Length: 299
Image (cartoon, rainbow, N blue to C red):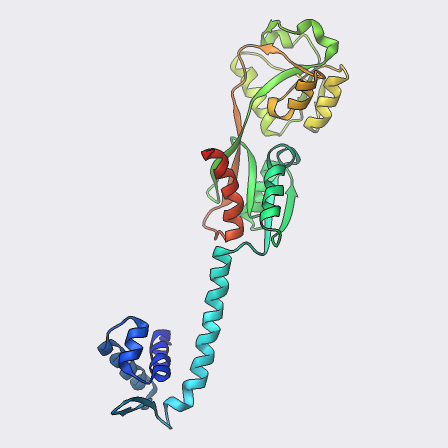
């Protein structure tokens, strides 16, 4: 097996022309330098240096024959190390971010814009899909970082490293149900009205079903919406009562298009988590993006 350190010592001695100077440059003792040279000579079966009174000189039949090749090899290895170091300390390449369309719109948009301004040389791929699909992309190395609606089942191939946003599901209505403003309602009261709920097989719908079942009720939708934006529009137009994270309806609530119903007990808070593949490397470009969320935590 090739011992690169022996060749590195040989190259340094040849360049310095002295065991003492080579030892100083390599930060090792002079006997260690001498021993390394002898070990390499034994491996190659030839003398690499002529030991002169004033220092070390490459031998015609040994050192001079290999010096140029050793120099090129070490320079090549140094270039490889520089490239790896650059990956660790500079933002380059492509960053693949996975999330649902809603998470991109309401949670990640500002972060992505800020990141792009700071690191314009990084190409950003946005992969929009539901959380289960993002998990599969993370596990198959087709996504670098995912943002998932929690909770999710434990998976040995991914790790959820931090919470980036909290979601508070609330029931909302439009002016067609103005008589409900300020009234305290129960889950059973809601069953009297047409409900607009997110479609099945989503984390949000599962959370709502669990909430209702814990109270001994079952909420059956009059309409299943395929997106939060579609639900907000239908509720604003008076088609029924919707259930949506308050954080996704702030503008319409503020502008009075929708109002929040006083339903008791309130639904438990959910969260959006940042997920990474387990045991994968983390280049600087990815660390820099994740650090934007750490800034929020410590703000």
